[in-house]
Image (cartoon, rainbow, N blue to C red; front, side):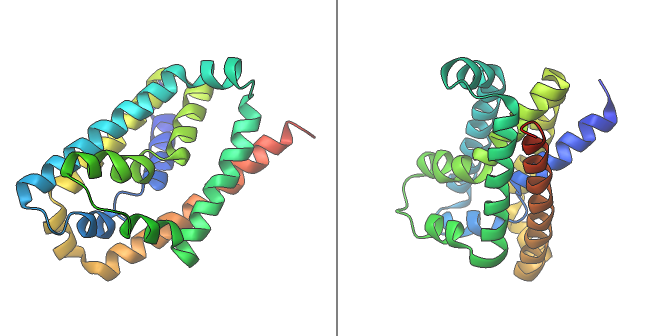
Length: 199
């Protein structure tokens, strides 16, 4: 296993999951909860994201290749375009974030699963990223990047109040915009890589 490849895969997944930029969203979704109930929501979010991403790298190839008859270049092109749209939305419009914030609030486990785990943490972009990492570099790289990123995410959510007070709303917003810029670049790269197969 190449440590450089693992680092690259981890950084790419971290930019897409964007737990730092999601801190204000998580705080708003759980602002009426006690600290204990809020932590239950965060634990549910991380565990559900873990299950979703691991199921996707284990069964994603079978589902896409044999059921939908989709090849890796198709997924890279579509996924790259999707990442680019998500990044542009976060950078400019924020429609996706607003739709999450104004959705109906449920109990801690419900919010932890939807929308915190999916689509915020383990959304289509994250699924596509781990699948590409699995297809190109193998199970260990994909699994390692998932464990590292979700481990960092769990730590961020566990100490979310302290981190938010330390960084502040402006710092979280700036970091989120920077990660979205990287996300847009990753999306363009994957889109071009996928289109190369057709030409």
